[in-house]
Amino acid sequence: MVAPTALKKKSIKDNTTAQKHIEEEEDELLLATELANEDSMEVEDSDKSNKVVLDVDGKPIFTKQAHSKTTNIKAEVRKVPVPPHRLAPLKQQWNKIYPPLVDHLKLQVRMNLKTKTVELKTNLKYTKDPDALQKGADFLKAFTLGFDLDDAIALLRLDDLYIETFEIKDVKTLQGDHLSRAIGRIAGKDGRTKFSIENATRTRLVIADSKIHILGGFTNIKMAREAVMSLILGAPPGKVYGNLRTIASRLKERY
Image (cartoon, rainbow, N blue to C red; front, side):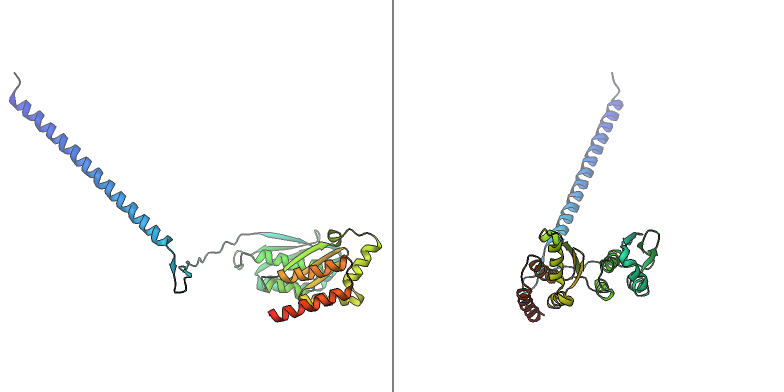
């Protein structure tokens, strides 16, 4: 016969294990409810952040973004090739070319006479603008294409200036004397047609053999390109001058 004390010990052990299971289940329930509450709070916060606040006029009000002090400046090198016919002007005006690149854009510049290229390099200590290398390359490219130094420097100061290049053959396939006559129509006598296009559209033109480079704003480049294309296609200069007068009057009204 089993002793009664043994039965009591077993019953006590069973009770303690049951209580432990109940406590564990309660702890799990508490943890689950806490996690659910945290998730609901995060969802509410995200909903609040995603909600767009409107002003009196119905326009959205955006919160100010924190200004990041660190700039993503990487050590990069850009090489701009110089054609042979622009080497002499580059050497003559080198004292005026490198100061804007060094003082304004904080770049390192050198002229490599062996490879006939101008090398640009970012300075991790002084260069602050992440687009400085691209601006410097565009400035040097404009000078190598044949634009004046003052016009090329405008690319560094203004952000809405572009360069567009196209060939006469892209508009109309011309060869021999026909090609030379088309170039003469674009330039005009003593460059009058070219100057009138530049003054009317507020652009700069460079005629390099059968290539035409246009420097200016987006809409101005479009107007100058249309005038040059009409001259290539054989339109009389008088008609082009009339169109340029209307374009100039429109620009004066706009600005």
